[in-house]
Image (cartoon, rainbow, N blue to C red):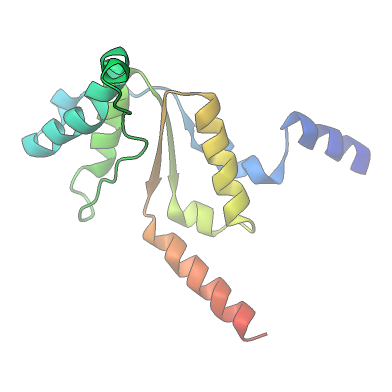
Length: 151
């Protein structure tokens, strides 16, 4: 019934805007930066940009420096971006959320799904959200724009 569906949505049990967020939830990874072989410079940069600020929050706060809120990892397919992201989370014990751009693009409400995903990550902080294959979102965005402009 509609009343039961509304109650479930209020409790977050079957809200349509949390489908991707629910599937994306992952426990803290077991990978560590030492597992990232063949890319020592990337591992060092990841440590300096993300791991150290998360481990040394008190020191950064004392110095009046905010740690990063986001880190962009880019490179060709298969170069280890996902492993690097998982290793950063594994180093600091952060919750890890991974979702593909294709999964988000296939949703009727991309914005709602994205908001739900980030809200879930915020609730589990410290956390990392990995948007893998994010270029799939641009395809969905441009096709939605072109279909709405031709109507």
